[in-house]
Every structure is written in C-alpha cells, then in structure tokens.
Length: 582
Image 1 (cartoon, rainbow, N blue to C red):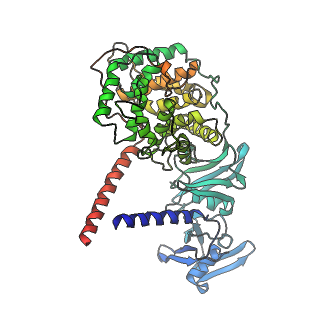
Image 2: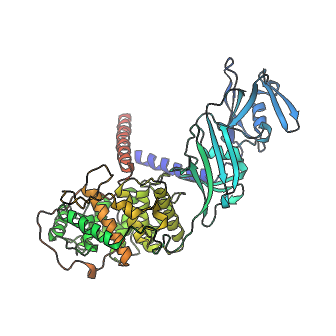
Image 3: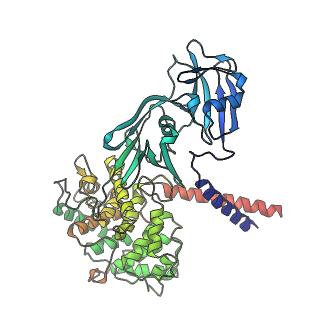
C-alpha cells in the first residue's frame, strides 16, 4: 500500500510539474490570482493584510486596489499622466506623505494604473514619508551588445525578500523580460527585445562578479549593484588556442621538473588508481602489487561494489596497470558500468561512467542500459544556464563537477549539439578563474585535466589572470623544498600541508598537461601499446579501499549524505506510523 501510494504521489508530482512548466507568467489564465496589501502610517499600522484576488485579463495595480478595498475607500484624481492616489481608507496624501506601491517588494517605476498585474504577484500600497531615506535600496544596470546601457537605475527601494529577477521585471517591465522555465529556475531569453541566441546570452552579475546562482534565486541585499549583461562567447574546435601562449615564465623544462618531483613523492606513498594512471601516462613503472591487490579486492567483493564510482575508478586503474577490466578474476567490471546505476552518485557517477567506457575502446552492446550516447545526452541535459554543472544537478554550478563533465564530453566535443555546450562550459570555467573563485589545487587540477582533454591551453589568455596562468597557479601548490618529506607533493590550499589526495590530482593534471603539450593523447585513454613494459615488486604498496572520485571544492557530497540520512530517518518514521495504523 505504501509503495503504491508513493508511486501515485510521484506520478502526480511529475504530471503537475509538466503542467506548470507549460505556462509562463506573462499570460493570465482563468482563475489566476494576486495578493494586495495596504500598509498605513506608523500610527494606523497595516490597513489591509494580504488579500487574494482573482485577476481579470487586463487588471492593473490600481484596479486590484479598488477591488480589494472597495471603490469608496480609494480617493484619487485623474491627471495627465494617469490616476493619482490621494487617499486609502481616509488616510490622505498630504505634507511629506504620499502613497507609493510595490510589486513583489520592489518599488514600482510606473503609476499603479499603468502596471498590469501578473499571476501570483504581491502588490503592496504603502504610506511613505519622502523625507526619510529608504532602508533598503539597490541599483540596476542592463547592458546590451557593444556595452550599450539599456537601463540604469539607482536607489531602487525594496522591501521583504525580493529577488534580482523580480527587480529586473519591475524595473524594466515584465513584458520586456522574456524567459523560459526549467527545473533549475528561470532562464532569461530576452531583455528589451535583445534575444539570447546563438553564442550570446544574458549574464547576471552581483557587485561586479558573475553570480553563482540564477537571478530568480538571488535574494537582494542592501546596496547591491545588480547588472544583467549581454555577452557573447566565441566557440571553436579549440576554445583556448594551443598556440595562445601568454606567460613566458612557463616552460616544458619547468613542467618536467614538476612531474619528476611529483612522481618521487608518489613512489614513497600509497599508490591507488589515480596515481597508477599518472604513472602510466608518464611512462613510469607501476608496482605489480597494485594490480594484485585490486584483483584480491574484486574477488573478495565478488565483483560487486556499493558505489558505482568505485567500479569506474577500478576499471581505469586496472587498464593503467595492464589488466583487463572485462575479465578481472572472472568479473566484467565494464559491464557493471553500462548496466549499472550510474546516476546513484549524481553527475560524478555519470561522467566517470562515460570516461571509463571510453578509456579502452570497449564495445558497448545496443541493449546496454547506458550507451555512450545516453550518457552524453544525460550530461548535456543537466547543464546550467551559466554553462556549468553541479554534482547533484542543482542550479548552483561548481567548477569541479563542470571540469569532470567536460573531461567526459571531450571525445564528443565536435559533435553537433555538444560543441556549443562544451564551449559554454569552458567559458564558465574561464570566468571562475578570472574572478578568483578557484582557491585550491584540486579544483585547479580538475580544470587542467579537462582543458587538456579538450585541447585547450591552461596557459592561454582564457585562463590567465594578472599574468598568472592556471597551470602556473596549480604548480604554486607543489612543495619544492628539497629534503622535505613532502617534497614533490601538492597542498590543497597554500597554508595546508601536503596530502596524498591533493597530490594524486595534481600529478594527474600536470601529466595531462604534458600530454597536451606533446600531442600524446589524453589522460584517461589507454591502449595496450602504451602500457608500462615492466613493473616492480613492492609488496608494501596497497590500494586504498575508500578513495573517492574527486569532489574537493564543494561540500555538496556531505550535504547530500546528511540529506540522505534525514530522508531515511523520515521514511523509517513514516513506515512505523503506517504499521501502527494497521
């Protein structure tokens, strides 16, 4: 019974979501409503709490006021510019006081009889003393193509929990702001008739920096400088330009020295899947014990792992060490991926499923639950409007997940439908670096790996800020102090000690960049002639059993874990209550 009810609820939510998605706020349908509130003076207080009204097709804010309080309670005069409200409920506009009105908490820029009310809006009429400075104000700029200022407003008052999108609608006019709804929020398609099309889009900035969230998710704060800017990115098969060098301080010798010292650190510590891949691509030997330990683990687990990402990284590690992941101790780990629950661990699981399946040119049957085409389409579907992705598919992009997904999409970057999304993703990462939002080595490493896979230079202009390129920035986290026990390793942040996890990602990235420089392929693609010709015995080297896929610059995984725990607790309580009812 419980299972059946759950399915019915999910089906209802799905159908209801599709139903809602078919409407936009600009068009009124029968039965649509708005709320009207009237706030008087300090002495009178609120004259009319929020009252819901059914809207007509051409209802203005003035009409809504009259319908809410009654025509006899509204004193107004007809002026050349429209209706002027002189009093509500007998409270007159006199002296320094007047009646102003707000739409969704934003001070309206037109008269009440000129504003057409939209479904779900909150209309507030407020008795205001114009001599008193408003408590909360923001500014708004709308910048079109060629940096032309289309709208420039200062000291726009807001009350309550208004969003940047509501500010844009009220200030510019809702009929001049077109958008499409998605499960991530509102995507602006046009402002003042200037459409987001082709390679151009409307970017959203807060206080001079591109926002991490959409305009409809950003809650206004006092003194915010909000801007919407029409921007165009230049797509190409090589967005960064491998010849686009801007930092002469970087050299192949410097890179090789970094790789050599990094390998020195790796060989003194545990070697897991990520280290094995870096050693393979750097043409270094991999201890035979690594593959033996993986075989023992696969046998112990009977080829079954609770995390799909474990299967994916073992496939990569086995290939790097010269093994066959399609027959490792009698188990086909590749099949476990293409017929597995790759979405269980968010977009990371999907991205590394595609990376693993492409790593050895495996044959994927048409009957597979996840073909390469399905994985590519799934990843593209969850790209956010700012060009980025996030681990859990939410609207707040993060550079780590974006880099991992771009790495997965790299083999398909020239395909129709993929190319533009890849280029937009690269532009998102460039913006993150240019705005100094990359603050740790792990994120920098993931981006370098992605760019190298896409044949984009981490030392090019797209990824250079203050004459410091991304690859140089990554190298700044490496310990270069000779005779130090952490020599050659990478720190997560500058004031942290060297750690093996950051080092594993750092060494992968610098090896990936060397492959890019030398045009020797990519980090995650293996062919048997590239496998090391010899291995060394070293029984002390073991494979860490709990090493997760990289996701270091975001706490989304932790939040998801907490949320999952709460979900299971709630489900347990629900089941218990249902059992008691029988």
